[in-house]
Amino acid sequence: MKTYRKHLITALSALTLGACALGAHAQTTEQAAAPVHHRMQHQKPTPEQRAQFRAQRIARLHDALKITPAQENTWNAFVASMQPPARRQHDRAAWANLTAPERMAKMIDMQKQRTAALEQRQGALDTFYSVLSTDQKKTFDEKAARFGHGHGHGMRRG
Image (cartoon, rainbow, N blue to C red):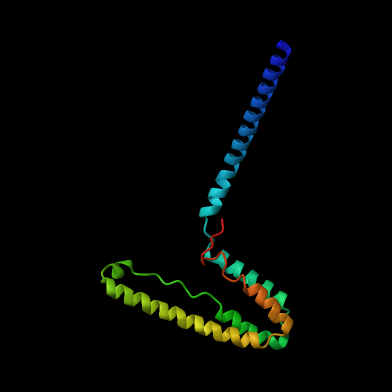
């Protein structure tokens, strides 16, 4: 009976010691990883980094589509139309002095401007898409399904 008790106590001690060691290891791993995750989450890319990333994406798409010299002009027009608009600084003081209906009217006007810009992009897209071959259209459709994800369109990357 005493032997059974000794074995039980020894086994429980070993399990407890193992669980403590595992918990300490997990805590050490989390602490080491936390600063990197925190830093990555709040670090915004510079305008130069965004432009470089955009250029790399455009180059990969150009290569994936295998753009021919005959398609190069429409490709260039398409790429130019897809450039993001320059960021405008809003005069917060001027907005603060507007009444609620005036602010709403201003927001509607800004949305109309965005819609007009999208319609211009649509025209360039239609023109470019019409000169693509069937295989190129298939590739473009696959790649275009991922356009905008993670870049301020509802999904955030860490």
